Image 1: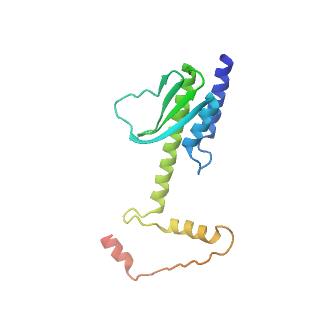
Image 2: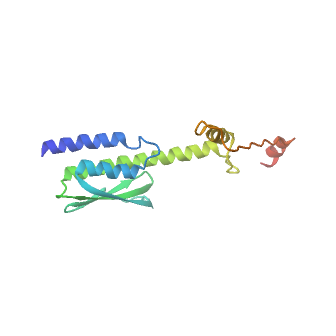
Image 3: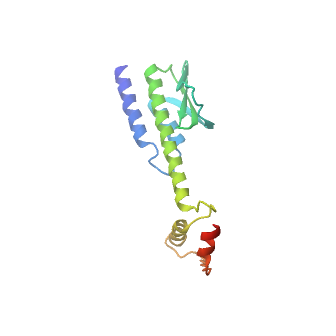
Length: 172
């Protein structure tokens, strides 16, 4: 029993280290695969978009026989609910490890959301919401160098309006 606990602990730590390594990967799918491997159980994640209730404490996991239901909490929202169906009843140690892995997943999802918001803020004009020069540079480089071959057609139009700075400064 102790050896199994140690193996599961090591596998959980390894899964946490590997969460979100692939920036294009689906973190909830990674969580499902990790939980299946660590706990030898079938894992199913259901995405939620619920606000985290303020002032209320939620149980991180609920156990009913060989079925465990674990919340994937974020800082301000509940990201998902994951259900584990094991071949035998889960121990309290396994339930704690599942909750730790789910919380790490929630933090990873929070970090990805923050990075996305940051990218949007740096690539968009706050007043108009239009893409700015930084986004133009990125998109132009992607369209010209996407696969090394010359693109079928690319058009670039620059417009210089005389006196626009004074108009922009005066009226926004």
